[in-house]
Amino acid sequence: MGPVDSADVTTPAFDLPDAVLRYAGHDDGVVDVHLPAGPGRAERRPLVCFVHGGFWRSQWDRKHARPLANALAELGYVVAVPEYRRGAGAWARTAEDVETAIAAAPGLLDGIGVPTTSTTVVGHSAGGHLALWLGNQPVDVRRVVALAPVGDLRMAAETGMGDGAAVAFLGGTPEQVPEVYDAADPGTRLRSRPSCDVVVVHGDRDDAVPVQCSRGLADRFGWLEYRELAGVDHSEVIDPLSDAWPSVLAALRG
Image (cartoon, rainbow, N blue to C red):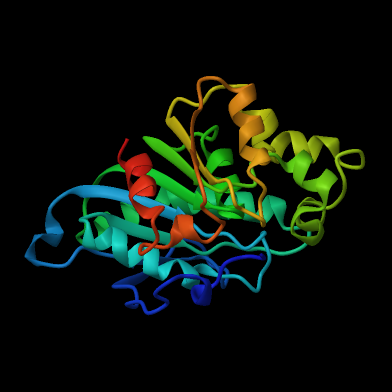
């Protein structure tokens, strides 16, 4: 299985965002905002920032996250789904965009009359990598939830995961650009424990990002909360109609 698009999710129908906000001047510098329904939108609510996956390739964008975003908004969350620059050699731009978008999201929302309380960052697949990376950045985040994350970039490079996605994204192999891997790889960076809670959720039938990737993180970092889901594949963890969805919500709520 490759990266997930709307057709991989049980119900691909979705509502469009309630707002699209800009956090940077480039074409991908936007955030989709999904709001809870009803007259209480001005109440302070928890914010979920969802970082989409797609093996950091430009053909996969934030639209495939809309069923998930709609489902979380229906539960009362304010949901922000940032877009970010992607593609071969894009690591530095991607990292800048994700950090900028997540840091800016509460202020941007406050500017349109949507106040928030705490921020939880959820990421799927390559977005799970970025969520884990963000946990060690100076951004005010309460909780990171990584769903089927590419959490070990050296493993991803060595195994050719995603048809060589990590090597293309980072601009070389671990031997060629070790300093880039040190800066980008949660498998290295999590040696310094983040101040926020970190949860990893992974299905044992994932054939896009093998579950061994997350098992290795759990073995190395005993403080990390790891939840393995039996019989669950790569797509189900972002599918609101899947059997895995209650486990995802439990990880998000803590």
